[in-house]
Image (cartoon, rainbow, N blue to C red; front, top):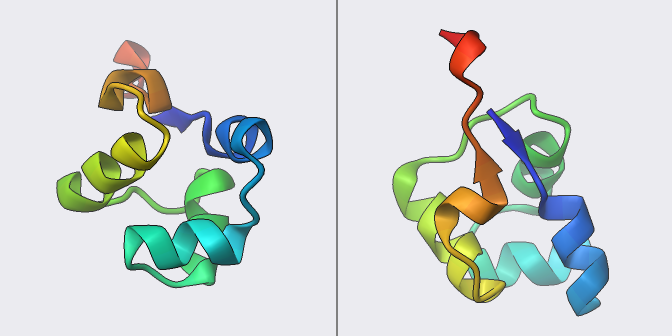
Length: 67
């Protein structure tokens, strides 16, 4: 699963620490998600999408061939 976190953070002017506080996760978690080293829980994914006022599927992109 790919994501647009870094792009959306830049668009909205958040750094990793600010986004982490809003999403109730650690800065390290945001970093891991951005690098595709960690898949967030559904709750965290929804929180992040709401922060950016985007549908979850616009923030987190499911790749069919990843199965």
